[in-house]
Image 1: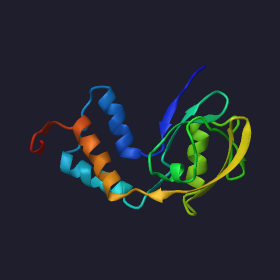
Image 2: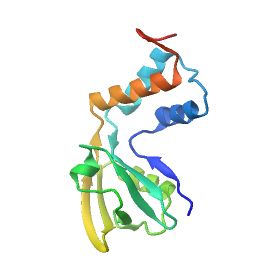
Image 3: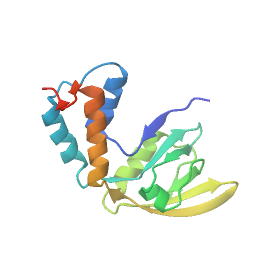
Image 4: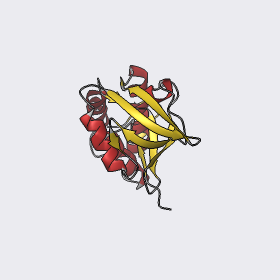
Length: 156
């Protein structure tokens, strides 16, 4: 079975930075500028707070962020997504799910039908904006992984 993972808490620059860090590459943008871009990108952006995996076919919840929107709505690790906002996800890919999230950007609401222990359940999730603390963690992680760091902070 082929699995692919996607985290719905981090997009754009941060996701690219994580891939770059894994490949032992460093971010080419100066640390201060990079930090500003990440903060601007994430400010006001809503997130689900769950990591999904393609289980071929379909999608399953791999993990749920503590105290995030998915956990508040009772989405759980192991839940198999059957439908989201009226669209079947039984054969969906991560790319399909990203499109559903994009389509829900205006309302910030997802109605998810999951299969849990053989029982279908409806879960209503309200996507929430990143908190300042979450953004600080994402920035710190990116700076540590993708920029030269000293005890006093990033090197320019």
